[in-house]
Image (cartoon, rainbow, N blue to C red; front, top):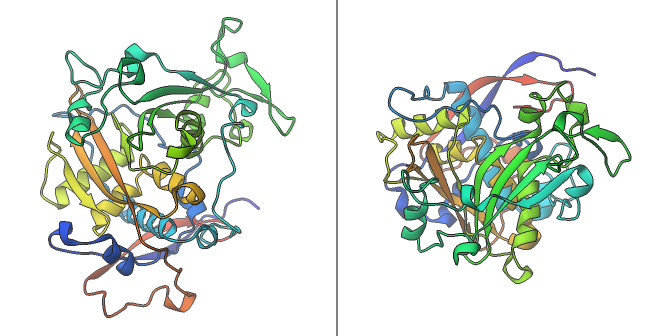
Length: 391
């Protein structure tokens, strides 16, 4: 059955912890974290980070602050992801629609190639220059060093390995990706989409950097003729690509060591709008000094639910067998030391003592006495025939 465009009111209950967020412990966050009635499978877009409009955050080019609908939607997504990160694998699986026996993903390093992906070391000259402009390029080297982290690739004596994952074949036998096809594991012949992800992994420090994420939906539309969504590869989410690289570049004894995610040169419209509203609500500006939001705040959860962040949470949710009790507990937002001054986001990963049990349906919307300050925001979303919420 096709989509039924029915509008209905969806109430999101999320707890606000006010005051000095540095005093809020991870245990307090988990104790007071409210449930979301979204399913994890509906939080994750098929292709993130969505539309790519190359908006630089510079004077005269500020994005609009997030609308009420986008803001509420992002908070709800962030809350859903936090809950799933704090559950066992089996309980997290129940948050999918339809429910699964477990949340674990079985995509691994052996599968990108059969689905048409090629993995290559990225051009080191282009992607291993972490220093600020004008002499450098990516502009996050000083920030990494301030955290005691490596700011160089392995080729330069550092700890980062940068890879390019491309849905297509760059070899000289093809003039363009337009004509390229492959036969997938299901024996169907499909066209390549030219999707591309460029990411860096560092198993010693336990970190991931995303430089560029252009999913199938974005790149397939530019081909001649465009590739229809029905021909997209089953393996296409950036979280699954990131995991494949984690398996490739991180030794087995270090794979459980995940401490942070860093995303650079953010240009997704929705993410930029959420960042601007988070800063304005807390009376801050985008500067070279990081603005810190922990997940006890609506700003932190909204940023976690933005297109550029979702894949990081999803990677933790779907690989609990490796990462165990890991959760994103705060984000730092700052201006990149580049000519375009696009934002950078640094997500810290913490370890919590024990998993939580999902509340029963009768408790889902119950306010507890500990909920001293809460808010309910309403917005309208689309409902489909199977009552699944899609965003």
